[in-house]
Image 1 (spheres, rainbow, N blue to C red):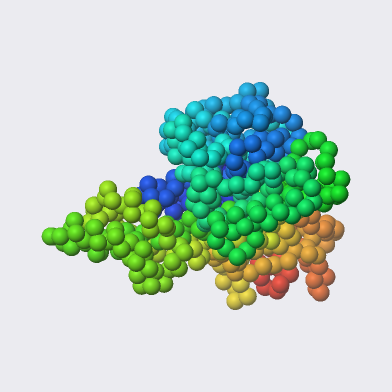
Image 2 (cartoon, rainbow, N blue to C red):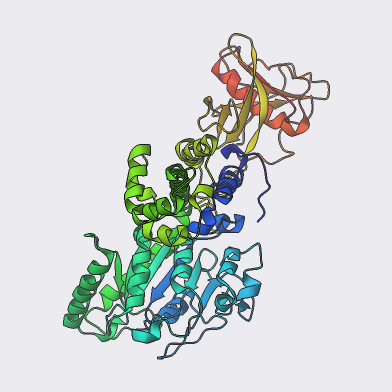
Length: 544
């Protein structure tokens, strides 16, 4: 989706999401494919999924106000909307930025490489017939994607008529969501068996969950206290954690609030929820890295499980009994692997899910993870991902549609290979990056830490004629750090550099062999290095 394939290095990319695309494509995807990771956990990631806007998943029982809630957030109706007291939403709907007047059917939605839903096609035609994309132009959809889900029914009706795996699809969306909102109707607090199983299956995404007590303005203050206490008691048995989930209590629609006593409180609750939603793009890059780390850790644990099961199988006789024994004791085997490899047990998958999936496989023929593959996982976890965060820490937010999140126009970078002259007179080839009034140089583009950082404050540049004869007559002009677009700055061999020094600011002679597309970076690099020591110089070279 617009990302040019290139050799992975954080310096080669303009955002965290693009760097993750490069890292996944070069180091992780083939390992997951070879180890059947997508068959046991979740589908392989596409570029569009890593580059997608933040996603918000809405879950709840029928008539809890999910679709009305989305209309309240969007500020208007959207294609395919249907609201009523009966269960009206019988499928999944994604509300995205766009101008299509009608909903886009599931088969068409999952066939586009520009949308992050291609992997949903694996759930079959029955699900795709119940999935669509609704496009709407509004402030919210410019920054977020909202996922509406079918209302969860109670009793035997909760799974009747569903020809697709509801829990697996919800889990797929949860893995790619930045926030999960559980909506409850304050008039009928109850947790059905299906909702309980869905919540339990999402325990790995506990930190994303938020509770919304909707339609609360029709209750008295005393009733609200009882409802809130009962809800927390119900959910305490489901989540099985001592921490209380972040909750919002109000009525999320356009009509005026009925409870005058709590009108101020519920209005503030509305504003807090909207504030939290609009803050999601600002932290999108951190959450993307966090989800990527969890996925890589799970992939490493998956490799260790396969290697252990292969190792425990006999060479000749008794394979069936060995497989039966390993499957029966799979939770203990996971603990054994964790102890022997010093990998946290929380990184391993649910052993009971793996029991069902492994039952159809011959353990002796499972793919084997080589030492090189395991080392690649270690490098991604210990070096590459921290390097991405380190590289982009000082930069404005890369959230989609957020305009950088830094409150100002983003300055384009210059980067490339140059030679710098060290204090001992030797020329050293280094990879330079010019950004934010700083010049950083690396031994290799993939290095996480720069070899040095030079401040460009106080630098100036001087121009001469075609002959390069400036003498002392040209007046230096201050450096404009925002003028970094191609074609600006000194051009050709007539460009010479000046830095105000104690010696009166003598101009340095022009360097030959500097290509035009590198001359600006070479000029600023030379100024910065010249500022450090009179003997330090840089010159441009042809990049590979």
